[in-house]
Amino acid sequence: MSGFAPPAGPSIFTRIAKGEIPSEIHYQDDQCLVISDIQPQAPVHLLVIPKLEITRLVDANSEHQVLLGHLLLVAGEMARKFDIDESFRLVINNGEGAGQTVFHLHLHLMGDKDFEESDL
Ligand code: AMP
Image 1 (cartoon, rainbow, N blue to C red):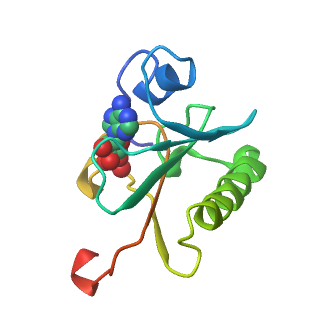
Image 2: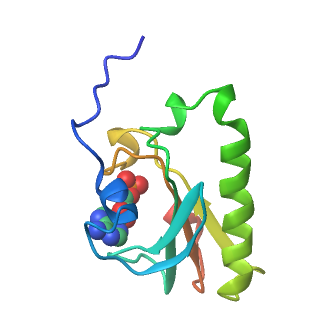
Image 3: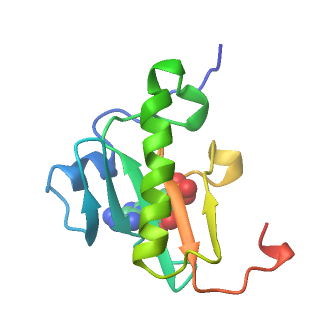
């Protein structure tokens, strides 16, 4: 058992999905949405976010298998749409120690940048 307790209340991403907080939304369907990161680390920096609030990747289970696959497919679709499909990086930060600041699972899709080993 992990001692981790997520912050109470809906996440900032849920509030964006509900239209309570403005954001640049590039895509959405019944399972996920794709927004621009507010503090981009690359010329293209999108967040692929499931509408279901899964706190961290490690909190996902086999019930989320189809959803997790869908997020990857949408990431690929967005990479094509933003013309970064030849070279992009997909990152999931899991836990504070890894730099996770929003405790609602999301994929960072970053591209149009020369990634160096030192970025890891
Ligand atoms: P992480 O650090 O992996 O949890 O990533 C959270 C990301 O969410 C960061 O890159 C933030 O810049 C981004 N972020 C936080 N608030 C917003 C917001 N209101 N709109 C768009 N991106 C946000």
